[in-house]
Image 1 (cartoon, one colour):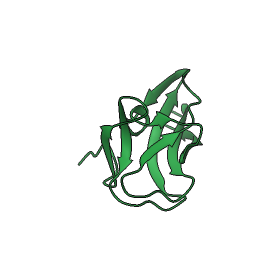
Image 2 (image 1 turned 45 degrees about the vertical axis):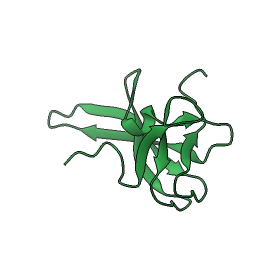
Image 3 (image 1 turned 180 degrees about the vertical axis):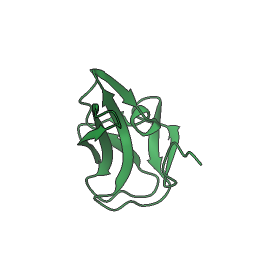
Image 4 (image 1 turned 135 degrees about the vertical axis):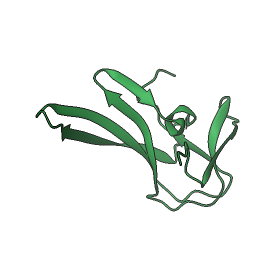
Length: 106
């Protein structure tokens, strides 16, 4: 079954802007929350994780880039990038997750 967010997260009103991502349970430093963005060609796609996280200069998460490559049966190489959201410190239950924007102007 598809789940747009990890069970430990929820979307709620944010004091930063609009809606944001919040924890339903404490998270340890280094927790990989999953894919937030995917780049195919020149287009960047946001997942729900990437679409609801707000910017902060004092962020508690970072986007970690993973370069991916695969070959299909006709020997065509398909390359893309994806970014996973990873916590940079312990995060308390109910705290909003934030990152420093690098793809968008703020």
